[in-house]
Length: 205
Figure 1 (cartoon, rainbow, N blue to C red):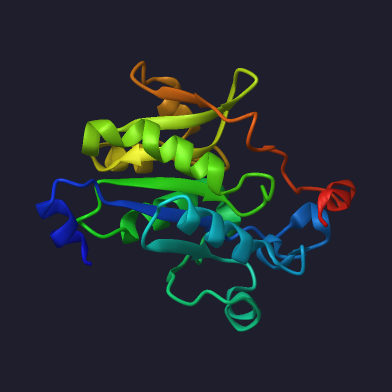
Figure 2 (figure 1 turned 60 degrees about the horizontal axis):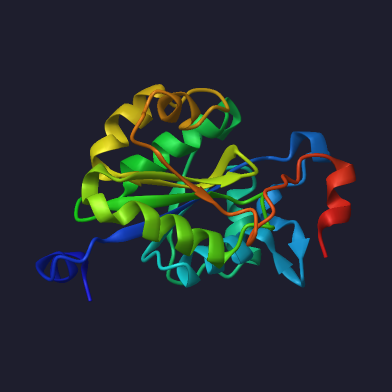
């Protein structure tokens, strides 16, 4: 069923956006998307979490070692977005991803590839909390009072989020200014750790 048909039934269309362009500078240049966890690359885990959490289709932003990621990871059915400016930080990947989203989408759930402790349960919870207000929706996971991912952005917010997304801040600056942001506790279903350094690799299975 395409986006237009879903809208005709007044069901919000929520797509997924996975930011997977990082080069793993502190990991010796190992692209994070291809780090192995439970027998497969992190990018595959994150795509599965978005899909199982109710996001369709899923857009994946690639940057570092993009061709290698395409060759070694199963991204069947995903829309791939190339970010040639990935070295400028996560903000550039978020801008590239938002620019690629389809016009029929009402909202997007944004997830980071280097947080394998966040799965479908957290995605579904944030998605459900934020879709009631359609294209004005705004929601984010919370872990013990601290805002984190996933984040749901209604389409009405995309232009302003893109303008504010610089360096590694992503949507952080924009969300800080929005009193209507719904915070959804997810600490009971997810662990928001990042895989950034060699020591963090011990958290992969």
